[in-house]
Image: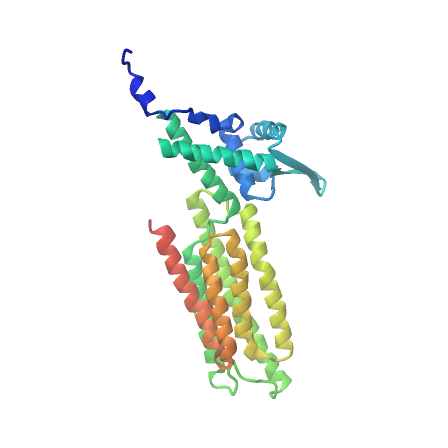
Length: 112
Length: 211
């Protein structure tokens, strides 16, 4: 086999692909942020998440929708006075998936 | 290698968000130091005020006339409220500075949680103290105020820097000891609200701000 530039980095890689444990859904920074916040808080509303993660309304809404589609978060709509206010919580599946993702990340760090 | 850095950053970001979203971090050691200094002043003012009268905090005043009791209580309320107000104003000021330094919002969910968890035991303690005053049981004021304050700190410590809980424990122990030596309430009060705050503030300042 001819040695090329890539050989060295390939050698460092462990036998099985460590990317397996990583969850594609959590590929985005915003989604990781949402899950991190919801795993330590019972519930958070839209504006608190927005302030915490420093993202735009549209951006946050689309990522929340994606997580909701995967059943990783649940939402509850309520009214504060006349204003609608949606609060988000992590679901059982969401918690399990996120912990799995975290473990994989940590394992990757260990191997690096 | 690039992936590795990304994962590391992800983990850092996750940890930071978990902490920022669940705990109020903009607590400054200076708040403790200043609160302690004001408390010592407040305590000394009370000491001076009553030094030459027949009354000492820690004494039974059930025998003294209502009018005099009323004036003593009034003085204690004003003195205590002034200490509380000054300590509050300065801790808001130092928290604002710290929040700016850390790049965190001063007011968010964590602020609400800390204040709520702090104020419930404090309001309960305040009502208890009001009733004690009604019955002229002034020697119970220092231990009860120290005890309820300690419990409020224990409670709020879950939502801010965890060291606040240690201060809470120290206050609770001080309050209990005071109950065993009711006569020396003013000294315990100065120790609990003055000395302990200053020690706590200096330790926090060393731990978090001198990096």
